[in-house]
Amino acid sequence: MLNWFKVDQAALMGISWGGFLALRAAAFEKRITHVISFGGCYDGLDVQFSLMRQPIKMVFKLLFHGKFEKTINRLVKSKMKKDPLADWALYHGMYITGTETPYEFYRSIKKHTLKGLLHKIDQKVLLLAGEQDHYIPLWQHDHLTDHLSHADVTSRLFTEEEGGEQHCQVGNYELALEYILTWLRENY
Image (cartoon, rainbow, N blue to C red; front, side, top):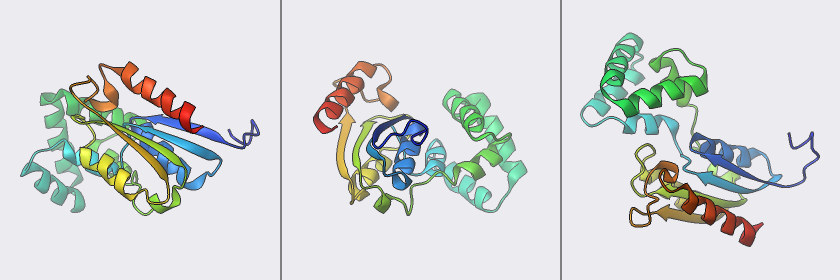
């Protein structure tokens, strides 16, 4: 797209999983001069595993790494019937990755990581997260904030008090959008 429109520099914003994709794109495309990761993540497989509680999480990881495909599909489909967040996360995840089963989705999402790429991101970066994000674990926002060592990072953690504590500030989008616009005005 940048070539088609002969764009020399651009700001790129990704929302939710798009926040991961925007950071990944910035690692390889230097015409992206400003990156907004609006609820983005560092490691997709960890996001999915974080939806499970211990000791189930540990057992599930062992099953996944042991390639117990049928068992995983059975367990996940059972969880999806009982847990609306897991149901949404898995169906949406299978949709965005073009996979047919939970196991295929997990194998695909394992590739969605910024491990080994953070040093390649050297643009101005805005990282946004909610302190009670129900989907992406807070450690991932903190990890990105602390390890984008070549980037000029602005990190913003929205709180419950201001109404922005959820994933992508669901319930108070205006709060995040005002912050994004201010950041762009000051940095672009």
